[in-house]
Amino acid sequence: LAAEVLRSALSALLGAARPHLDWPAAGVFSAKVVFKTFIVIVCARSLRRRRNAALAALRMDARNDVLVGSLALLGLILERVGLPRVDAILAIGIALYIAYAGLRLGRENASLLLGESATLERQQELTALAAAVPGVRGTSALLAVWRGSLLHVQLSIQVDPMLSLREAHAIGHAVETKLSAAPDVGPVVVHVEPQ
Image (cartoon, rainbow, N blue to C red; front, side):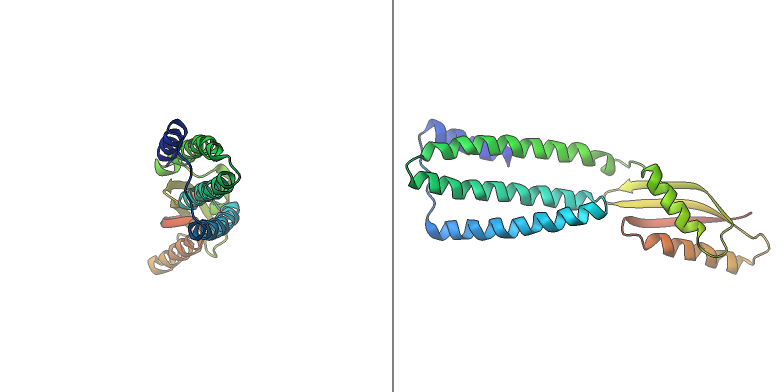
């Protein structure tokens, strides 16, 4: 998107092209700006609650659409008041911003896609959730790794060695269910061991 906006801006600037946007198209751009602004706000609120690479990408895409749509509307206004070249100059700045935002998003989320471990704080929260399940006497060997926008979790729990296999399995299943209920957790594997 950055390359296309930059190419169009330079072509318009070097060719002295004037922006051509009629009022019905301006209405469509205005509606798009309002809708995409709503998406940016919703994604930002969701991202405050939990980290999610897909939502971050959606927010960035919507924000870029807001900038490009706003630029188109500003270009229309500036062309109407006799300043058509300012549109192309503003577009160069927008192209640079879009490139920067895309690179930043890629850098921030590459670790999620490559299997970064959850933060120590999040690992402790998951361990505490597991330890709170009735029948769990201890926990160890927690592994929580990002795979896209979800954590894949493996955990060993210790239970009373006098429990039947069925009872121990039920406790392990309860831990899996409790951890899986967290919005950032995907697959959970619980290993049950005698204490």
